[in-house]
Length: 495
Image 1: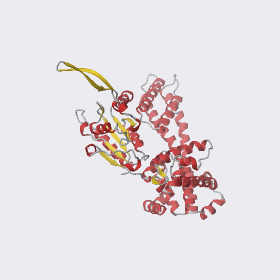
Image 2: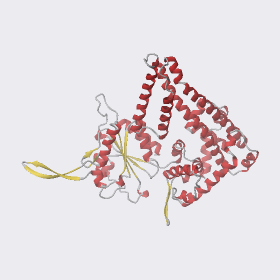
Image 3: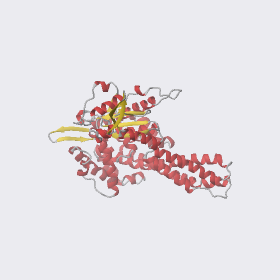
Image 4: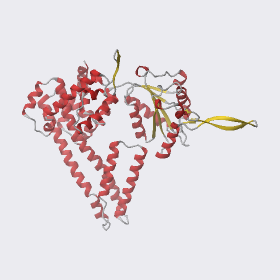
């Protein structure tokens, strides 16, 4: 299965294992809650999906890479205590609490969430001294003499032997007590995640052209050569900062993330071309409706890779407009909900200003609880902080009545709404200019298929188009048979 299917399966398992009956007991008792064992190549996103599942299910997450631990930290340190049996005193060895189990209890204490996921990565790559402990963990759900707390689900991940020389095979007794999910790398599944994370558009464009280079592991006389999904994402993060600092991304730098010389060389050459296309074609001018006279002549004579790259550059610029409008809309939606609540109660409040501050304090507490629980992404934290800042800037005056207080409270909202209207108009105009260029440059060819398909499958553009219908988009979506045509195109690219 792919990583998206694995995420859904694990999420369903979490929901089933945490389901309770009328008496408050778990429907599936802990002894029947088999740990999940994900087996798949490194760097495909196993840790990321665990973070996503914990956020979406509103539960805790404790994550460990077990190869970083010794037997003592996993099991606990031994100590001697005395016990009496049949009127005779004996020295007995016991163990302190495992560092891993202690971390679960800390999470429960600090986060306030009694249920969660204990995720152990690289579980089949441990040392010989720790291997029996891992078998005991999977079979008995304990570390040493300490059990994983009730309500905490065990998920472990390991690497197949072809990716790691330290891999140890599990015996039948262990495998008969777990649910094994075998996961494979899949660019088509990673791509929506990459869009959401704003992976560099040049990288996504390259991988559309060279999907076979998304995940490669090869061994030859020169040693192991590999490229992983993690490598692409980390490279993208560095490229963003290097661009701000005006530092070149050289082939050597790329090779530090993509450990395959041929791929690194190919990517380096493509990134140089991609930047050149952005400058030569004037993407910003195209989206502003100011296409230079020489652009059409060049695109008519361009090879397919160049035309393909121009489409992705155009989409990247267009998505910038759409993202800007979407962020403002999310802020306004949350702000509107606050104002609606304020308006509903302000008429009965002894002090309209004090009532406003009370609601604001409640919002602040919700944010702090969500942040403490680890349920917010970086973007969601930023959105919350922006909302709270806006609400604090618009506290109504003390001497105003209910009606005056409400209108004062919504003044900032009205200004932000005007900003959203401008951003939406800009996005609609950029979309119209993009379609004008695409029609003149490519008519209804394969490039237009790609353009319309990307608008359709990208969550952000799909939301925008649902609220701001585009006649040309609907026309081309209807006539270009998106699924079939794109499948044929990608098949041609793979050949």
